[in-house]
Amino acid sequence: MSDALVIIPTYNEKENIEVIIRATFKQKKEFDILVVDDNSPDMTWKIVENLILEFPNRLFLEKRQGKNGLGTAYIHGFKWGLAKKYDYIIEMDADFSHNPEDLIHLYSACKNEGSDVSVGSRYVNNKVNVVNWDVKRLLLSYFASKYVRLITRIPLFDTTAGFVCWKRHVLETIQLDKIKFIGYAFQIEMKFKAWKHGFNIKEVSVVFTDRMVGISKMTGGIVSEALFGVIKMKLKGLPK
Image (cartoon, rainbow, N blue to C red):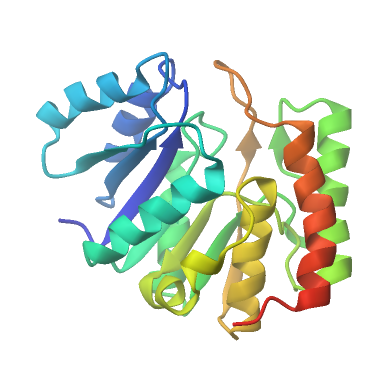
């Protein structure tokens, strides 16, 4: 058993899931993987079940009954990982927008460099590291992070990043059952709570590459949740 768990939430990711799992297992550092699948109609979960036969002690599957949002999938995974006593728990997308080769950098920032949380950042020091996004989406993401930083004062360049490594004591301290947002704003709320608790958050520069296959899960409702949710977070202060 590794000391680090990578959580990959999935919904209709049959084109990507086997390749991302194998790429993760090829890294020099050993990571375990938990796939949290929301009962994908394309049977992504079935591919994972077959791979578990090949990797019985490193690959795990939690199959939920329906599509209930990214945030709830990660919280499900966090609780599973904490119960299994992992010291480091990492969020990663299934579509290769997050490069598995960067896992070691996020892990090392927490393991060896004193960080409680490490964020795979697309915008460290305002330098943009994004590939294959159209200008409209890039500007939306970049200025959304700027907006969040302005409203909340959280000292991060990429407040909406979804490639994150958490030390277990951070997740144990944050009251996961009180996380309010389930979409895009989930990533903001988690970082905001960690910061309010005084944890050390480090940004690690990564290159974000848009998915080559499959369909993006981004919707207007998810973006709206983030924009208006940030104001609610700031006003309420998200009590600990």
